[in-house]
Length: 437
Image (tube, rainbow, N blue to C red; front, side):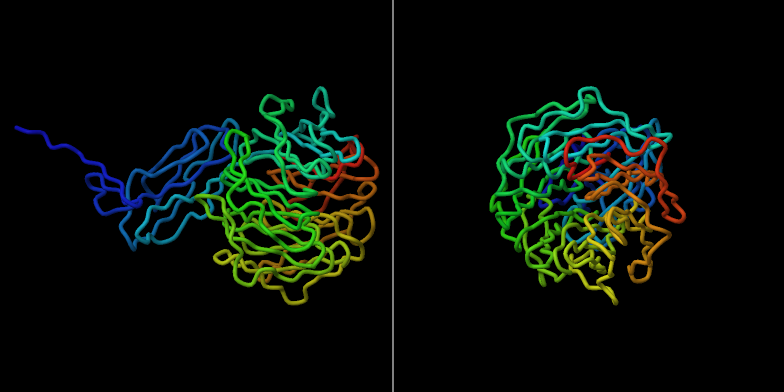
């Protein structure tokens, strides 16, 4: 008796495998996974247990026109992590789903600053019980470029990317061993790189070139950058900040010189950029920072020259921004940096309400409007960059003129900040940016 053979054919994402005939697969990318025991489900079944970062695909297929819904059934442990699903639900439309993002985070482990004047990078470990900083042996490290002004850590916590403003380069360092090791010679950017961001899938990197009025785009392979076709892309005048939305679908660029935000759709397969309808969107005067809440519902822009924060509702499908009623919100002084807490309840703004302060605003869930929450907190001199650790328990602020970092514990109920015992902590000369992972 002859045995029947299984035949596997993949055409335009159509999964044909025995009982999966005429069905389409669902999958995507896991980033930041460090613990064990993660279990994903699709439509409350078809359990999948990724144990490494990278692509994943559920075994069972789904018929065209049927819904899919990816959720986390079990969170990782040892270390304990929180994994969040983005782009996780929808309806099959004659194609496999490949762009679900599962982002895993845990309590902060390290902090880095870009010290512009001393051409150096400071690195610290974090005392998870207090939030206090512990300088890494050898810190500060000499940068391979000149005038580092921005930096970011990839979602997997392996590489640190640094924008060097006067050498017109991006430096890449491996940080997985607890120190900074240069991966390769710095990569050329446009003139005056001022901001840098990695997309949530860890596949693409984007750099805002302040003097060139452009954004450079790169693919990433083991930390090595390769310029994408069409890069650099023209934006508005003097781009100062770049942000990718949590779903990884859109790139937002603040343009200081013409008071606007340029918005691009990101091709998930290539990283290429396409301006969306309605872009650019108006801001207040001199936008320098943009923050997006974790639900991809609201966006906020710090207008340094306008002493205000622009508030927007965000259309997660189109990427478009719509000003909230009453926007922009006056801040009383020049806002330099914004960040949203991981729970999406508060916006933290550096150098607002008064010079050298950090202030929390609560987010109105129904509209996105900001309301001052509690009293402003004193920082160092000229706080230019504020970030929260992934747990939302601690806030870190780089103070440009006092060459230090202020560290605060965060009241997750009220948003209030309280300086930790040994704060502030010494940094290099003119710390312009701070990153935590």
